[in-house]
Amino acid sequence: MTPLMRFLSSLLVVAFIGNTASCAADIQSGRDYSIIDRPLAAPKDKIEVIEFFSYGCSHCKDFHPILDAWEAKLPGDVTLRRVPVSFNRPAWARLSRIYFTLNAMGELPRLNGAVFKALHEDRINFSSDEAVIDWAVKSGLDGKRFGAMLSSFSIQSMVPRADQEAASTGIKGVPSLVVDGKYLLNNDATTTFDGLLKNVDKLVAKTRAERKKKGQ
Image (cartoon, rainbow, N blue to C red; front, side, top):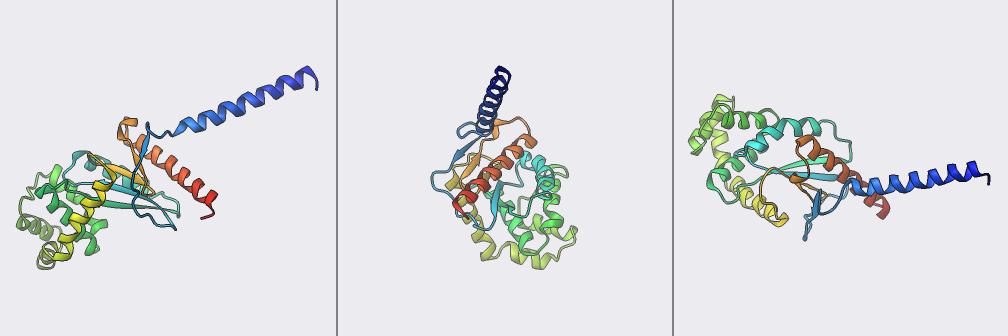
């Protein structure tokens, strides 16, 4: 091997080592995310991303359109599931019931963002079910049907189940994101929502590679 070839070969080795180290440092446990002690059940045919949120959270309101835009571009093997949480606050529990009711009625795509607007921009006070029903009617829903579902046992029982799922991840606030039931994003690892979603994308890629290695 000529001196020139040895030199070029050494450059390739250095470049390879540097690139490998860069990839390894790209997403780090303990810095960008933590591993949940008792992972949530996750679908096998999809890589699930969960957003724990509340309509009462102003940060969730700001994040909502950004997350919607991200969801619209997801590849076929990735899915997003939103889970409203109350942290045992009665006012937020009512907001969780609004989410579950709209979802059950098939009205979530149309009115999900409208709930954030009603609370944070229009300053509508959802301090009672009657106030929520009044908003629903003005939003074009059947008030009687909406009210019946809002107070139904099936909808009410979804609230503690959602809270329990959130509690099992150890989250302290919202919005919080979990990938594949086991990777909890660290919001403090980035200063922007776009940066947070880039870390989600990296964990999705990590999960995809892990599943491929396992032959799933």
